[in-house]
Length: 242
Image 1: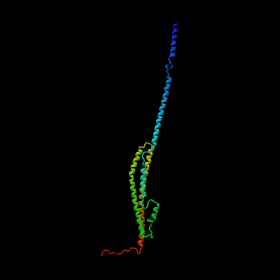
Image 2: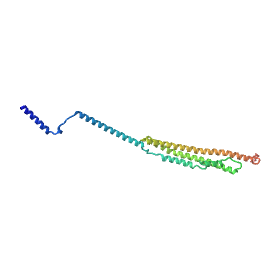
Image 3: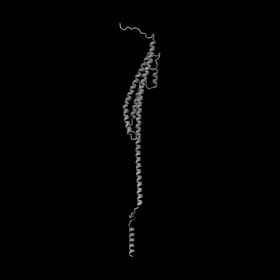
Image 4: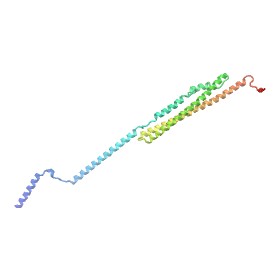
């Protein structure tokens, strides 16, 4: 009887304690659940890291695109245009027979035309003087063009150095391309200067050759006239000293 009483008392105490303790005070540890939670958190952390890496890559890609699309801060266009305009002005200032087909045709039909018997001696002399003036003016024009091209050399040297430095320091593809295009433009301008020099020098040489050819033709006509007058030239004794 005593044993039964103790058991009954213990049961009563247990029941009372069970009603007295709140449910949150009961802590139950589940190892499987804990492992699953840890794995889930690790996977979420990995996804976050992947997203961060992806965002960083996209940001770097945008930065690279911005660099590739950035314009070259240096431009030599104005200097190149000024050099070309100076050369064009020198060519446009050509004296007398300029670079014009109609002017050339008129000159070769008048002062450079073959001498004929119907032309007076004064016309022959006038044509000869006009041809000499044309050659003289063309030589002066060629020298002026050469002087202008030499004046462009210092500008070209400065622009070449600046463009090479810009090309080497380009931060993107567009800047490198623009620097390369400007270098090509500079080369084209230098080629244009060379063409202008060759053209001016060729003009002077052509007019000089035309002058010689016309002078030979006029000389033959004047010799024919000299020999055709009267009985021609006859030598005679001349007494110079008494």
